[in-house]
Length: 467
Image 1: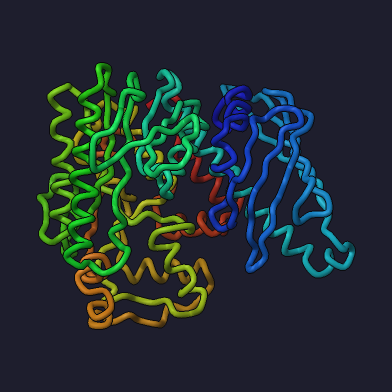
Image 2 (image 1 turned 45 degrees about the vertical axis):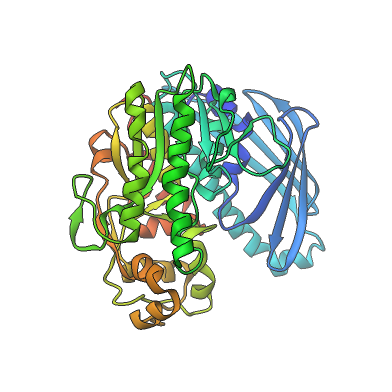
């Protein structure tokens, strides 16, 4: 691991570490996560196929900076004892040792029937955990000379928001989540109203705001009412948040707001970067209004960053999550011509890019949050089919897309662009997943411990804390 033993231990003892360590292909929800100390416990709600169950583990032999043990008291294994130990290395490095002792129920019959599959699944799980731990620690170590921050996050219940909050919390930062609704608030939550006045005084002294909230653009056909809701949620919601920030006596130094590569419209002819003008179409109109709503922040000297996000690669949500079942059923293939550009980014790289935008003062204005290797839709479909070991033979013709989805299908499925992350690359940001094949293998547990994990971390970080 690219940090000292104490830093490695602190990361594991944080409340965000558990969320970061659950593989995306595992259906699990954290129901209870007590502070890690002797006798505390963790409860996961899990599902395997149609079977739902709870996995309850108690923490034992807890020694901060040295080790802790998870012992299952309820779950799928007859016995499960997992020891995490942290060993000091040289040159500000350390070693994480995972020692697992387990036995299956109904052994030895279960060993004969399922033993090999369980061993393969555990190998995939720990390859994922080790790589994500390495990368998260390396991202944190890069800014280890900076003070820890208080970061306010809207849209914290979405897939990106949840991942960002867990990453920042595990990195030692304090996260305040902006939430809507009338339910009981947790200690780290503040209620806000994106369409009206609300009390932002509890956010005084926050160092950074990350604005991810907005209506889902892919949920249903774009009727006139639906389009008005999408536009209002982006432009008015952002304007409302900026007005609340400007009312603070001690406003944050930076605001990072989500935007989208839809800003560029349909641009399939050539690769484009942040210098390209806005395109045409509803998405381009929305993103222009979205980004323009940040303009008042300049009057207070607040740095603002508009992250123009591409298709987020995550097995749990978004395009990949929606396509997973059709591809597993053998119904995957090209959409339209298949030659439209898909500018994508792995969810971990997106979280890291937002963190980088908070810390890196040279980033300002539009920033393309996309991987450096955009692909065609057909290339994307073939890569997903390879990872899931399914054919890529069932096309979705353009006339059918227009018939089923109307204007939404035209802009989201048939249009595209090949976008480059010039601003991120110029300021030294390093991607963990540069190719679509690697990103999909990581999301679906197809990595190998020796090749993918080691190569990715060595290319992403040469020397933690220096650049």
